[in-house]
Length: 58
Image 1: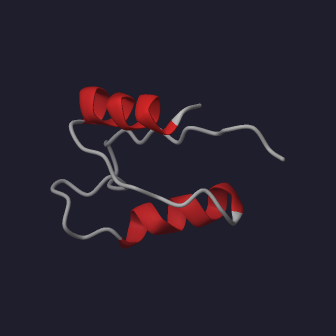
Image 2: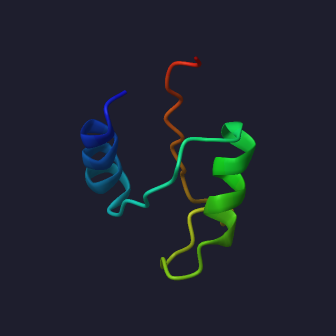
């Protein structure tokens, strides 16, 4: 998935976007979301929806 589409998807669906380097697998991305404290409400709180866009594995 192209970076620009990913950013638009995050901005439109969940009202914010966070740049995350796609390395280290999905576990790394999930851990990065958990560490974000400047977003209100935090993306990994119970009841919130978090989309992780998985690209092609090379």
